[in-house]
Amino acid sequence: MKILGLIIVVLVGAVLEYATIDFPPLGDPASPASTHVSPRYIEKSIEETAVPNVVTSVLADYRGFDTMFETTVIFSAGVACFLLLRVPPSRRPQRASERQYRHRLTGLTFRIKGGAEVSLPLHEFERVDSIWTPYDFIIEKVCRYLIPFIQLFGLYVIAHGHHSPGGGFQGGVILGASIILLSVSHNLRIALKRMGERTSALFSPVGVFIYAGTGALCLILGYNFLDYQALAALLPGGPIMARSHGIFIVEVGVGMAVMGTMVWIFKNLASLGRYDEGL
Amino acid sequence: MEDILRQIIEKDNYWIYITLMMVGLYAIIAKNNLVKKIVGMNIFQTAVILFYVSIGVKKGATIPIIEHVHDTAHTAIHAVDYINPLPHVLMLTAIVVSVATLGVALAIAITVYRRYQTLEEDEILKQIREP
Image (tube, rainbow over all chains, first blue to last red):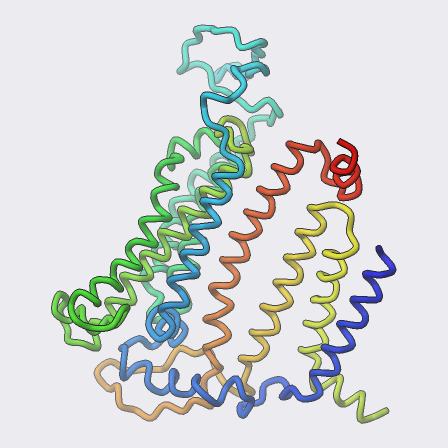
C-alpha cells in the first residue's frame, strides 16, 4: 500500500506540476483570476454597498448565497457531531466509575467509588476530573481575566468587519475559542455552566435563521432573495446604507452560527458526548 | 536547464502547494491510523487554501480595504491597487468549514473506536471480515 501510494502521489504531483506551465506567475495583476469579476467588486463596492472592506461586501452581498450555504454546512456539521456522539442521559453508565472531589481550603482530594451517594457541603468541595489535573493558580486566574477581553475583541471583530479585516466568521471563531479556553483552563462543567448545551445548540440554528430570514424578508418586501436594498423600507439611510446594514445583520447571524457550532462540536468531542468530564 | 530553473523560481507558490497537497494525499492513502488520515486531509485542505490565497496576490497592491474619506465616495478606485478579494472570500469560509468537517471526522473516528476498540485500519478490516 505504501509503495502504491507513493507511485500515485508522485504521478499526480507530476501531472499537477505539468499543468502549472500554463498558470500565470505569482503576483501577476493580469492573471485570469484577477481580471474578470474581481475588478468590478473592487471598483463598485463603496458605490453600491458603502462597505470599504471588499471581502465583507463580496462575502455577504455579492456572493450571499454561497455564504448562506456555508453557514448551513457548519450547522449541519454541528448536528452531525451531536448525532454521532451524544449519549442520552438515560443511557449513560450510572456513575459506575469513580468521582473525585477536592477540598477547596486544604487541597485534599477525595475519591468516591462505585457511584455511592454522599452528601458533601458543596461550597467546600469542588469536583475534579478523574484524569487528575493539579490545581494551577496562574492558568486559572490569567484565563479568568483574559476571557472577557477575548470576547470583547470577538464582538469588535464582528461589528467592525465593514472597515477592517474581520466579520462574522472570524469573530464567531474568536468567541467560540474563548469558551473553549474557559473549558481547557478550568474544566468542562464550568464552561457548561457559562454556555450550556442548549444555548450552544440554539445559537447555530438561530444564526442560520437570521441569515436566511433576512433574505426572506427582502423577498417579502418585493425584491430578490438577499437583496438588502429592500431593507431601506425598515432601516434609515436609503438603499445603499440599507445594503451596509443588511450585511451587518447577516454577519451577526454568521457569527452566532459559527460560535455556537464551534462550542457545540468541542463539547461533544471533548466529553465523548457525555457532558460530564472532559478537558 | 536555466529555463526550467527560472520556471521553478517564478512559480514557487505552485510548487509549495503541490508539495503540501501531495504530503496530505500520501497520508490519506498510505497511513494506517485513521487519525493520521484525518491529519493528512487537513494538510490537503491547507494546501488548497494556500493555493487560492496565492492566486489573489498582485505585485505592489495592498489589502482589499478601499481607502475612503467620509462623504467623498466618488474618488477614482483602480483595481490594480488592491489584491483580488475573491479568493480570500472563498477561503475565509473554507477555513471555518474545514474546522467543522474536522470535527465531524473526529466524531466518526470516536464512534469507530467505540465499536472496534482500535483506530488501525487493518485491524478494523480484520474484525469486519471475521465476525
